[in-house]
Image (cartoon, rainbow, N blue to C red; front, side, top):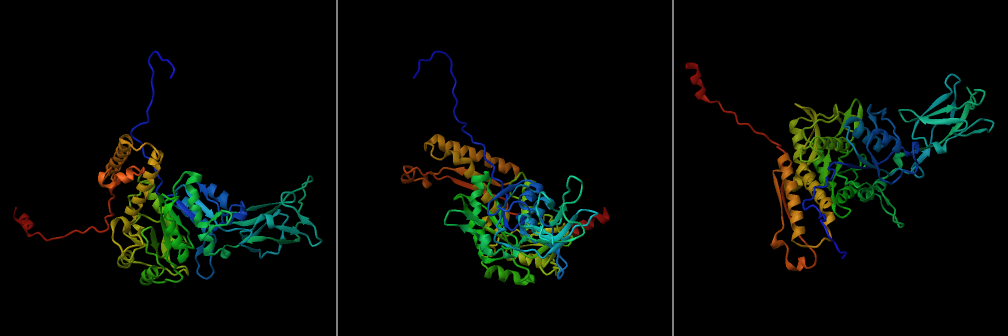
Length: 494
């Protein structure tokens, strides 16, 4: 050591660690998008989006279209539904989105075979959605083939329709033949070709991940922990629902989330049939929320799972991003509940409560207007354990666990001595006291107990900490006892 003479300083790590906040309600969305409109290679890779414009630029957007049979407007692409719900209706960010629709596999030929460019505008709208620009071919009857970017420009309008606009030459003349039928051909993305297996995904022989398997890439890529997993339009499939539930535990081996699944309204048309379908489909997991029926806003149909995910994120944001408040009895952006065929569903308090008692979240128009209604995870009523059966309590256990992992990961491989134990215990208890002061928990403490740490574990480098915590259960029933008190008759004589 060098010879020193004078006054010197050094620093030691702070003995109290501030908690690393795990975002409670970030949705991980798997579905279909018209990526041919934007980036054809944007397939089976997670994309983090903070704004509506960012999401549309990454995945494209097709507005909901009216169904001739039902009268409802429906989203052709499920990711478009999620983007609209998250950003336009609920204003909640961020989201992590995975598109599984591959334009190279899930495509079909456009129906349009000819177009005519009017001289007045120099452009024409091809009223088909999902047109893939790289496949567009425009030619004359004589065989002249026009080139994109040189002879014409292809853009998309707000409905997702392709707009062909002729460019002009140096003399100001249109390069495309005007008022003449031109041969048009193109491929367009076909979301109906996407199967449940594409949503489930997996790992290929070369190690490439797809579908729900990509939830494992979120933290390494974005340093964010998904809190909610949804796959609207596909979650009713039993295989998809099962994988969604399995992915909720042990994300990257340590993190936890919750999934939201829809009970299919084309199959389950009455509230009384929903519980049997739920049980028969195996939707009975503590990390699942089951929903029925669909919801609608201004004639646009949504899966309830889509809107519930947005609502949960909004409620969390209103409470410092701590998920201790239930989404139940909070306003949904809807004006009705429907089946997939457009049939209106009206649930009163008794029928909505029946669904709640079977572990199903629904929507109801009552004193507070249109609200989500139900506090139970899908494990209820087979289990009534508070930490498993109540949505906000289950989410709090997930969030607290995720936060503990992120906060104390830096202490892994430190010397297992009293200083380490005190740092972990003191840091956690200060944080838990703060949550209690906020009202997010009724109380909590972290202990390092001798009985749980035998010498055989300690000499092997294994330390066990016991975290006691009590998130508040939602006040699902408030009962007032009214009594006629005859003693107040005395006021007649005072």
